[in-house]
Length: 129
Image 1 (cartoon, one colour):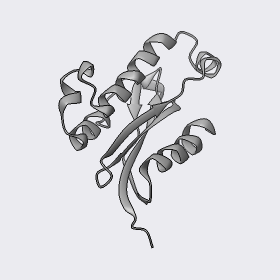
Image 2 (cartoon, helix red, strand yellow):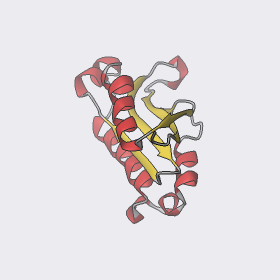
Image 3 (tube, helix red, strand yellow):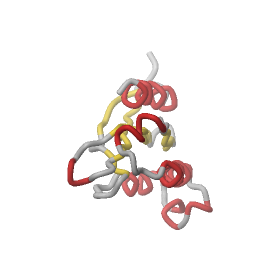
Image 4 (cartoon, one colour):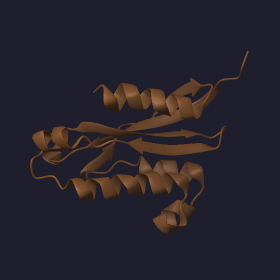
């Protein structure tokens, strides 16, 4: 039997009006220490986002979400946070904040393959929400 690996994930949410506490799930960030895996994945549905928040700047949101991905991958051009170890980057990306882009609480689980688990969670939490 294949070993199961502990992973942690959070849902990335678009919260255009923080005071209303309404959000759309737009991505997932998943960390698995044993597999040395940290990756974020997102998708912006322009029509849905404009219906939810007509004044939203889609280009700005895409840039900010791309920064999540760049930091999770440890890209040099993503700045000083991207130079931290994977666990520290995950903690920084999932820290509580009151901005237009927020993450859910961190949830744990066990998986065989972190990349497959990211894809499954992305389909469940983002594509079908």
